[in-house]
Length: 219
Image (cartoon, rainbow, N blue to C red):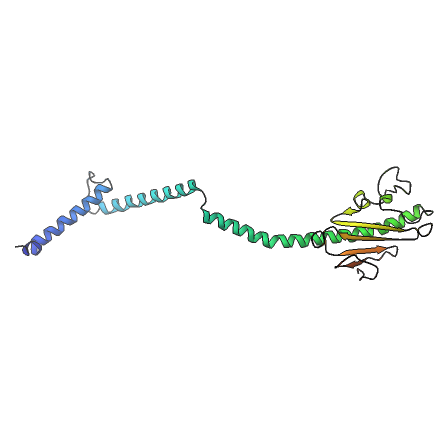
């Protein structure tokens, strides 16, 4: 008798009853139990409700993630990217700054040489100026003390990361010679090369120390 319950018609009835229970549990879970179901309609309604339920779960998950903010891993990734970009960009910016400061130093030395020619023409009894300050602005701009030929920064001896040292040759009157040196305030940071010039209006450079007339000449 026990075997007969699971064979033939009793078995098919048992299978149909189990299927109806399964169907009823799904409809009950989806809120469709009390809705009249037509033949072939309830699977579509089930899938539609399941789809809406999954969308609600996904929306709730995204909202919860946005409320929680960034995770530690995400922050670490952002920091690592910033450090990589900085490691690439900072050396390039430093080299660009050094190049710009060196170009400015060469231009300033040329400005000093040109100003000395003008100064010695305006004040032939003095010759070349005694200091850079004497060629800078101030006063009435008509005396050897304040000729107003160069800008205040260059007259002060410091400009664009370089320090300028000017020496007049006062062994004769009027002064017939001078030297001017331009050295980076911090070598390999504000500049790499040092520069030298004199009344011959030629600029020399050195990459290792203070430049002099025996160093290579800029072309």
